[in-house]
Image (cartoon, rainbow, N blue to C red; front, side, top):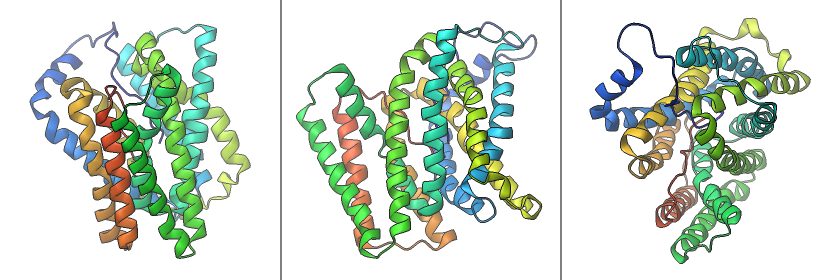
Length: 332
């Protein structure tokens, strides 16, 4: 998914003309923020198996074609209309160019790698490697701000790296080279999304979360549709895709990605990032349980040990750092 900061824009100046305002509903549900967060984490964990099932009927480029040729533009326009009515925020040419460039990283390259990686790998592996995103975010923040890395953070990084190596070795030792290639694509995607997170942070603060999320998606649609078309996206036998396939794709893009990120932004504002971030590490166990129960994914002690070390290292590094403003690795 693409995975972007979907925080509601507090600067919106065009509330609904009648009826309860969005702020009213936000305050009404604040007491239920924890159970809502747990439900969302469960939906994200489930999404890894749902997205994997879509590849039975559509190639990754076919999924990208539908996602960015239809679903993402429609969702972006709806969100802009709900937030601003017909008076959308105006951007300078410089901001449009910047959003286009970061959109290519966050959508075209990142989501493209995630789609192909999930197709080659397994749902549990996808969830673990995408969960390494906060580690890359911390490293990038340290490099870009030239701050000295704390000893505890450095220890967490080493633990996570050891866990990732053990986790990746499980497929290499069994000769699953295609799955290993998928794991590497997912790891690279996690790093690229971290770069997107760091680069868009000042844009979110200056322009607002909704404009950044929607405009980067809209600006990315034409090149992604072109890339997917050249990659054989139109070769999908569309008439043979069952209703369950279309519903699964809709769930993955609309519910898990678009709506999910919007809800997570609200949860972060209500609970605070420090209280919300630990919940992210429940996603991989959920994804693993669902993949085992529904998809028959097998688990070896090497895979489990690597996953535990990787997630523990990421968590330790993240919470040992004074900067916990790390976005969750949402299921694509």
